[in-house]
Image 1 (cartoon, helix red, strand yellow):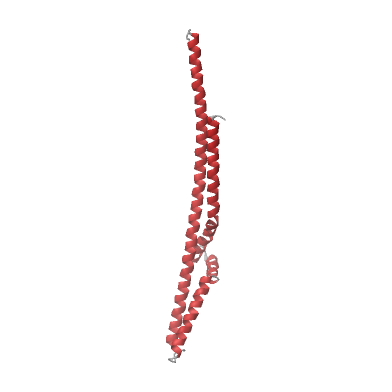
Image 2 (cartoon, rainbow, N blue to C red; image 1 turned 90 degrees about the vertical axis):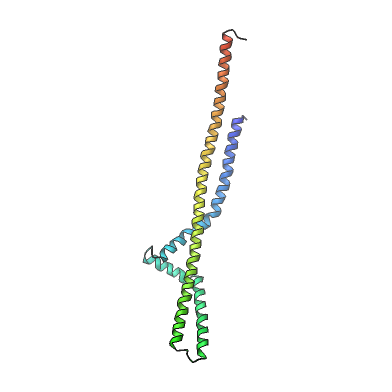
Amino acid sequence: MTGGKKKRNDIAEGEQKFNTFANQAIATQQPFAKQGVPAVNQLSAISGLSGQHAQNVARGQFNNSLFYTGGRTAFNNEKDEIDSALASQGLVYSQSRQNAVADARERNYQNALNSFLNNTGSVANVGIGAATNQANTYLNQGNVAVGAQNNIANTRQGFLGGLQQVAGIGQAIGGSMARGGF
């Protein structure tokens, strides 16, 4: 095997190894990138950017989430505490209770929604980051492929350049012998 052919094979092998690792990186990030798109869509829908139907679907997703369930549980616990505290004073049916319960409902709902949105935003950020990393890995694969092909072409050019030098030496020797040299 000539030095040029071995070098070309080494370049191709290096490119293949790079692609193996790059494809593993892309595959590893795929689940995160896949989840990022729905999370972004959900945030857009809740924000009202995707129309009323999408907003209703997103609201339903929140209402069916563990965040909503946790907020409702926290509200019910707080309401029981309010009722216990006011019952000893005979104020179970008072305006104070109504105000305290309304405040607890609103606060717990808002906390649950904020937690839901923060979580969804985190999933969206991770997904966008993974998708960006995948795109950059694809770009790097393309750059490596171009670089490898240039290196392979350069080894061929080097080989052809070497042949030209040998031919030039042969011509010089042939011309020298024709003039009576040696």
